[in-house]
Length: 272
Image (cartoon, rainbow, N blue to C red; front, top):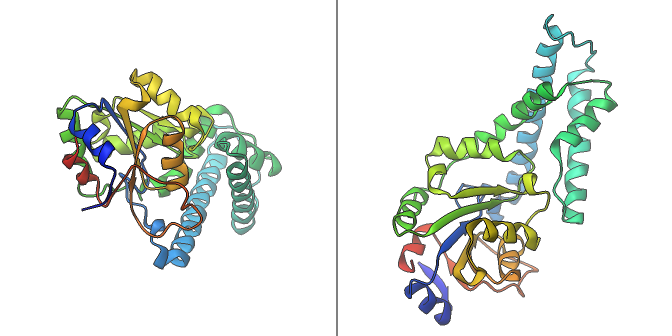
């Protein structure tokens, strides 16, 4: 169901003038329950729980690593509760500061800061493994909306280029592994993650990088996302057509106006 239509943009879609469609990930292609305003408190608790669960996975990994004779890792881990508490406090502080600066948190550097404060020294290989352990709990959340795969197939078969831009603190290759597991990675010409580029949406740079890689002018591309500030504002700032996948009430961002509002990703079939 379409809730808002810009006639000029509608004519543009029907003319076959669109050469590329770029998607956001969380809340757009992949389910994100946190956008349900009626469950805001429970969603916050769930994310805190997932963070603690992920940190606990890191602790378990370090404990096993410290017991391996082959690693020669001479560390003395603090108590589990103290470790989780200190880890959680630092990573949440870093994340909030990164949002204020509109910069991407560098998770490996944050981890190194945390481990240095605990007198834990890891080599690059061990740090990579730790990041993977931390991501596991979040990876289990990655589930597609039912209409995503058939819509991507439809757009791909029309010869329209597909790409993805996502804000994330995790390495892009971890998300790409999830997309492969879900069976949609092959339909994208490429994927771009803020963790790899160093800036987050709505920073114009991340959108410009995508357009350059696609070799498509902004007026020939559309961006589809579920957030007014990150997705719609960012896409419109570089001249792209911006489509909002509507999820709930947006407050304080009423001045950001999308070119089109849809309820489901499959609604795109009506215009492409």
